[in-house]
Length: 70
Image (cartoon, rainbow, N blue to C red; front, top):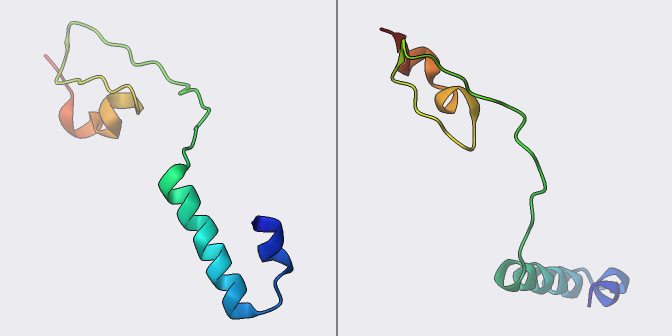
């Protein structure tokens, strides 16, 4: 379908075909995000308020406002 859409000369028909293709991807497709988070959070018993977050480092980038030393 993509090859046919690429060769379509009628702009309106090509636009509709690309729309249909995008809807197919949206409704039936999936995606994989291959990545590795390159960070390590460390702590000490004096550090208070830290909440580990598996998606982002330093207490979800809020350490400056949420973490303190006891």
